[in-house]
Each structure stands twice: as structure tokens, then as C-alpha cells.
Image (cartoon, rainbow, N blue to C red; front, side, top):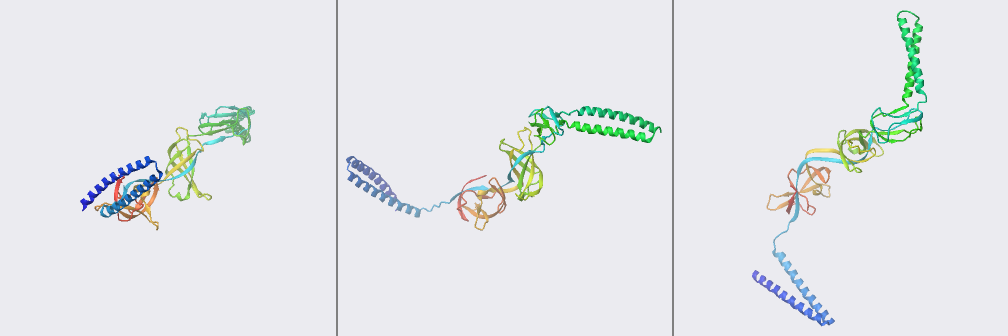
Amino acid sequence: MKKIIIILGILGITYSCADKEAVKANVDTVIEGGDLTEMKAKRTEVLASYDSISKVLSKLETAISEIDTTKKHTLVTAYKVIDTTFKNYISIQGNVDTSENILIYPEYQGVLSQVYVKQGQKVSKGQTLAKIDDGGLSSQLAQLEAQYQLAKTTYDRQERLWQQKIGSEIQYLQAKTNMESAQSAVKQLRSQLSKTTITAPFSGVIDDIITEQGQVVAPGMQAIMRLVNLNDMHVNASVPENYIKSVVKGSLVNVTFPALGKTVEGKIKTVSSFINPSNRTFEIEVDVPNTDKTIKPNLMANLEINNYSKENALVIPSDCIQENAKGDKYVFLIDETGANSKAVQTKIETGNSQSGLIEVLSGLEKDTKIVKDGALTLKDGETVTVKTSNQ
């Protein structure tokens, strides 16, 4: 019977091919005749012929599906569960700052007679930056120093006489008082005169000259210049309060500066003990290296803080995980013990996630194969065809 069907099929195909050639010849003849009525009639005939063929093919497809016992299984890709060092990061923004970024104001009133530095110049701690006219204080100091020397000489002589029991005690005490008074006056005037010389309180760079030479300056008025130290840089950032246990002093931080296109590694230097009630955050300070001096104050920074690390953690891609109506999370294990691979639904518990990977706390073991792609339509116990594996 099977041979007969095959022979009939071959004959049918042969006849069909011959019939197609005949139909094509007839169509060409009708088209050449140019009669519209005949062309429409031929079109109706051809359509009826193709409709008949379509019905025959449909019957054949039905028959084949009933006889063919080959089953097609769902095609999936596998992922082998690995154990690795898992790190979780939180991302926040911050601003660059430095503890040595100050405006230098005058402490004495007068004319700014000299400015010894230029904008962008590097200076050392204690270096003279500018000079204010002292208005005669130097001359006054010279007079007071002369008076002090005289008072000291008088006191020394009176002290020697007093030690020899010569002279009165009152003369000795008066000489001592005169010397100490003159010494105090000299110190006071020296202190006042020192305010006319402006020096660098720390090493750094002159960022800006604000007041030009020749202008009158006075305490509390306009600043003379800005001094910045680019060596001791840090980033200030606000961290949500729910991370207060995991973000601690000494934690490693990856600091990225979008404007510079660079990333450096820093450490948390300080953690605030105060939570801002308006936004429920606490402040942190992260030290950042600045060897090339490209990092500037107030530069925006993106921080990735390592708030969780675990050795030998089981990690899988997050898209392997499904969730049911109860909120339970599960994956499909690939059981390869039988003749065919089967997908077995398994409940799991998860932890932190990072960059598309998620930590599995329970439900899986190392080197277990799970379904990665194709799990969405799977049913528990379904036979599958495994395409590839990640390892």
C-alpha cells in the first residue's frame, strides 16, 4: 500500500508539472488573442485549479501529522551555576572639595603696596604673597625697640646692684616693670606689623588674584586672593539612611568624573553621625588621589560604593529567574539523568544583585545546570532540548 501511495504521488507530481505547462500555454494563447472575456474566463479556471491543489495539500498535511510520531521539544539554553567573589555596589553622586581652599583676607588696613605672586603660581607654606603699606609702623617699632634696650640695660644694672644689697627694692622693681612694659609694647607692635605681610598658610596654587596692587584694603572687606591645595582632594556625598550599616569608614569606592572621562579608586575617610531629616541621608567624605592635578573643586563625581562582598557566592543571571503569583522565585533545573533532558521547577532564595547577576542564597548548588533562555513558557517536568551552555 505504501509503495502504491508513493507511485501515485510521483505520477501526480509528473501530471501536475505537465498540467502546469499546458495551463501556461493556454494562458499565453488567450493573452495573445486579446479577448477580455476569454481572459477573465481563463483566470476563473486557473483559480479553481489552485484551490483544488490547496485542498489536496491540506489533506496530505493532516495525514502526515497523524502518522509522524516524531515530537519537537522546547529548545532552551543552559547556564551552569558558578561560585565566585560577589560584590555589590550602590551608586550616588557627589562633589569634589578640598579642606585647603580659602580666600585670603587682609588683617591690616592700608594700601596694597606689593603683590609678589601671579595667578596659577605654586607657592609654599609661609611664602610671602603680598605686602600692605604699614603707614609708619616700622619707624615706631624701631623707637620702641630702642626704648626696650635702654629699659633692659637699666634693669640689668639695677639687678646686679640689688644682688649686692645696694640700692632700694623699689628701684629694682621699677626698673623691672619699665623693661617688661617696653618689651610688651615691642611684641604688640611687631604683631601688628606682621599683619602687613601676607603669607601662604599652606602650600598650594594661587587660583585667583582678586585685589590688584595699589588698592586700599581693610579687614573684612574684599579678599586679596584665593589659595587652593589640589593634593588633598576629597568627594562629599549624601547616602540614603538605609545603607547606614553597610557604608562604613574604609570602604572602597570607585569614583568616576564624567567631565574628565577618568575613574580612580578611593576610600571613605569619614562617615557622618548625623542624618539629615529633610532628605533622610548622611554625609560621607571619600579621599581621592590627584597626582596629575586634573581634579578640581566642585567637579561632579559618580560614586560606586562597595557595600557588600562575599567569597564563593553562587551567582546566576537575573533573567533566569521566574516568579509566581505568590511572589516565590524559582528557576528550572535541567535534569539529564534520563534519556531526555527535563526541566524541573525549583524554588530559590536570592540576595543582592549587581550588573545583571544575582546572588542565590538557597535552592541551588555549584555546577548545577539551569535554563537560561526559553524558560518563560516551560512547565515543570517538560522535556527540553538543550542548545548551549555558559561553561
